[in-house]
Structure formats: structure tokens, C-alpha cells
Image (cartoon, rainbow, N blue to C red; front, side, top):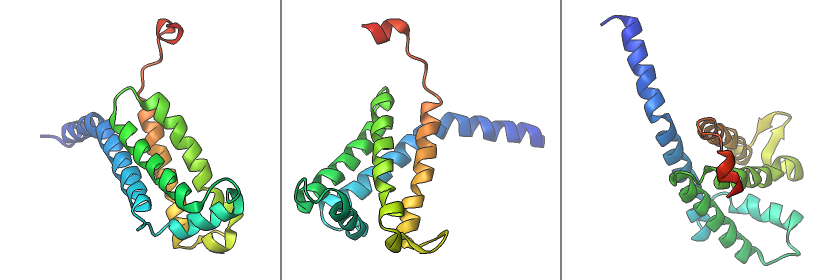
Length: 152
């Protein structure tokens, strides 16, 4: 087998599995991290609480918020496993990404040791760019909506 044939086979294989792997990866990460919040074991809870205190403390108790936030993450993960749920889950995920990026601006002392040098918490937040890339990859493989589907 020549190198270009092997290369072609590898590329074809990767194309076939890329969407399922992206879906499962997003499920695992969102569900896992959300579940850790629900059971009170998330290493991110401290930063989440400090951001909550800076922005939403007036709305509800943190204990309720963290349960709802964790449940939302679990739902996002589950929705990525469901074909045809992409148009629902990707906007929800984008809103989630905006809120989770909040500490980069609102809690700079927590997420930066100096300019462009993140703490572990900062790295945890910045890795969300990879999750966003996976969601964009999934969205790029959607079929455009049919005009009849949109109207009915």
C-alpha cells in the first residue's frame, strides 16, 4: 500500500468518526463536570461561587444555583448525544460558554498570575475554546433547514 492510499484511508476513517467522537466528548465533559457540581465535588465550585457572588447573589441561594448549573451542564451533555438536537443545544452551550468565561474579566486575580499567564482555574476556563471548536465542527456538518421545516 502506498503512502497516499494509507493517508486517504486514515482521513476517510477520521471523517466517519469525527462527529460521533465530538458528540461523545462533549457529552462526557459536560455531564461529568455538571454531575460533580450536583454532588458537591467540583474543583471549580469555588470560582463559580465567587463569580456568583459578584453577579447573581441577589437572585437565589448559591446552593440552589450550583445544583441548577450542574443540571444544565448535564442536560447540555445529554443533548449532544441526541441527533437533531444540535440547533437547541449549541445556542445553550454558547450562552453557557459566555457565562463561564466571566471570571476571566470579573475575577482576574483568580484566573491570571500575570498578563496571559493563567492559573489552573484560568486554564480550566480557556480549555472551553476546544469545546467550542467541537460544537462548531458538529454545526458545520448540519444540513440547512428546509423552508417547509421552518414554517411548519
